[in-house]
Image (cartoon, rainbow, N blue to C red; front, side, top):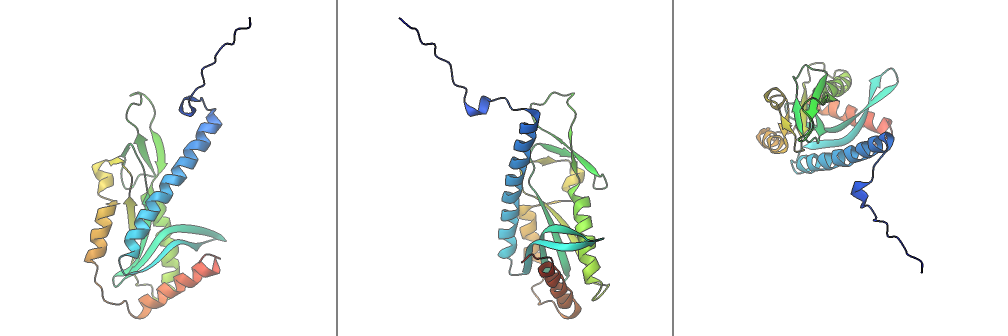
Length: 201
């Protein structure tokens, strides 16, 4: 008589990944989460009645380009929106180049993950937008908004320099609904043309 030995099949969640596979999985998961955050912000902006551009690709000098999550136009100026969807606990300062991220359950002595500051990232986006706007009128204001859509708990300093989704909705609600005029409209058109010239609709 032959005895058959049963081998317990491990569920997918218990599979051990190599360091490379784990990195690929984290990148894939971050991309999916990022798309969810951008979709939520896009929905809010599209309902605002303001002129909006999503995933705008603009020249950034020296033959480079930069991709901007969202742009919208108000009578006050041109607004540049960077969307992030993070979890865990985020600490840092608006002037820090890197923010620190920790998750519950991690060992106290585990080094924090370092995340490039979305505030600095969006500052670079604003410079690209202003480089186009100033060709029309150097006095056109360009505003930076970093919107956090995830479950991350932010330190007070980071709360002060970011917006939640509901705070973005409040900001949009409080904006004047006058139609932008003059050079502001011309600058917005120039930015739209630059997006098309980059091959992005």
